[in-house]
Length: 59
Image (tube, rainbow, N blue to C red; front, top):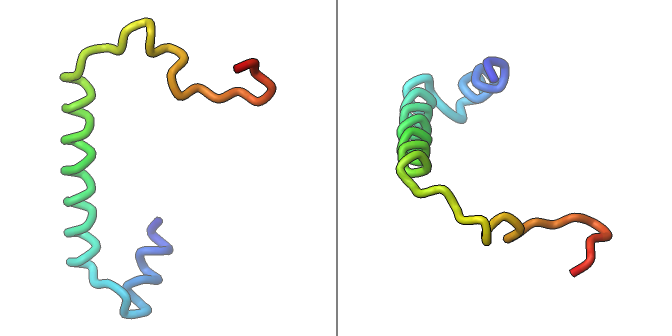
């Protein structure tokens, strides 16, 4: 990512400050998602096959 970051800055598409702000926002969103997941109850056994796809599997 350092090369892409440098490219964005060199091309005038972003500044160091704007990229740092974006990183901070992403980290906060990820932290919030992890906290939500850890605080959520584990799914029941009936959910084990929900939204599972396997090619050639019988429906």
